[in-house]
Image (cartoon, rainbow, N blue to C red; front, side, top):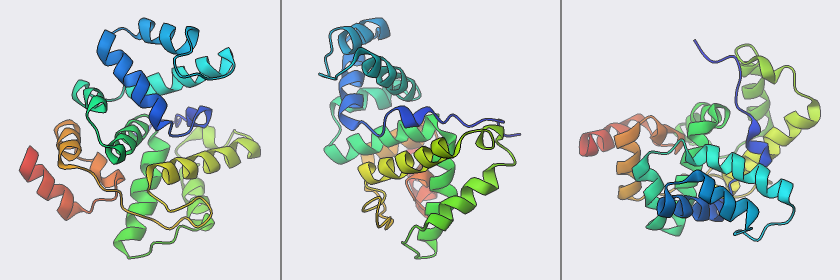
Length: 209
């Protein structure tokens, strides 16, 4: 039985790799989310504008980071620039089932068929197919629907899953063995969101499980 609602609050802030890294490292130093809140929101550690923006973005990024295991969260301090993107995208896959489903059900399947071109019709078909199971997709405005699509594709661009929002050519991201290990130890199903095929996932399970 699926949940009747998707979490769609990712429109509050796109991938935000740098911000996620800073917040994760602040948390690793203190293990105290209240202290991190004070640094980021009250003391403006990220040099953001309005207080309301800082609050909104912090709340969303905290929710994402809290989905990660302690080992994954700690990896922010050692990760390469590409793994920082992947780690941040992992937190999005774990929080937002909508984005995870799109990556695994649409992007991954197209890649398996050597079809590298994302089309607007792919998204529209996906969205329509989910309306039956997820009530809130039927009740949001057209403006919100448009923003969901735009922000998701922007996140995929920022993470390197597509070459650009305009062209939407699919690119398989590169994950280091260290990050793969952290994913497999947690739940190997998330490798499918990084567009790994079943054979590749099973090989990594053999290596790290």
